[in-house]
Length: 241
Image (cartoon, rainbow, N blue to C red; front, side, top):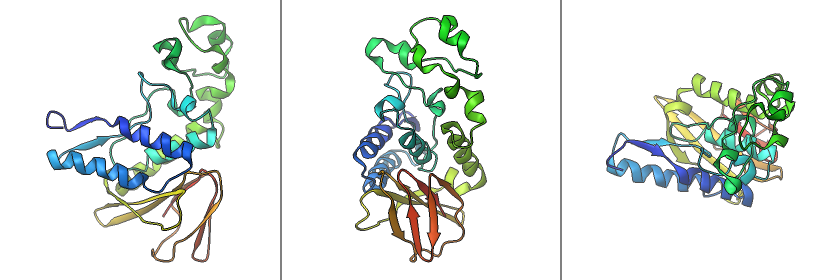
C-alpha cells in the first residue's frame, strides 16, 4: 500500500461476482468499505481502483453465466461504488471467454460494426471465440439499442459526470434490516448526497424509503418505481436518489 496510491482492486470483483451469483447484496458495501479503510490507513491519498475483470482473468460474462441482467447490474455497481473505476475493453459489450484454452480468449478485439462476417471468417486472427462475433454484440448494434449493456455503461457514466458525489464522494453502507438481497450505500461530496440501491437477486423487492428525505429518482437500471414511501426494485435492478 505504501508504494502506490492506487492499484487494481481485484477483490472488488471477486466479492461482487460471489454476491451476484449468490443473490445476496447485504454486506457487500461494508466489505468494500473495509478495503477502502485499509488503504487510507496507510496512505491518506489512497484511491480505490475498482474494476470487474481484466486481461488476465476469465471474462465477467463467463463468470456470471452470460446473464445480461447480472452484467448490467455489475456495470451499475461498478460505476456507483466508491473509487475510480476501470473498464476492460469488451466488458461494456458483454464479451465472454475463459483462460482455459489460452489468454487470447479473454482478449478478443472490439467488434465495431454490425457486419460481423469478416470478423467471424477469421480476419481477427488468432484464438478467438467466433461464436461470440455476431452483429448483436457489436458497438454499432448496441449503441442503437437503448436496453443494451453498452448503454447501461454510458448512462451510468453520464451520471458520474453529472453528480460529483458519484465521482468523488465518500462511500458508506446504508443498513436495510431484513433486505438481504439489497446492497445500499450513500455517496456524499461537498454537500451533495446520493442514495444508491441495488437488488442482487432475480426477485422483486419492496423497500421502505421514508427515513430518507428523497428527491426525485436520478437514475435507474432495470425496473424501479416509487409509490408513497416505498421503492419497488425489480430483479437485478438499481435506483439512485
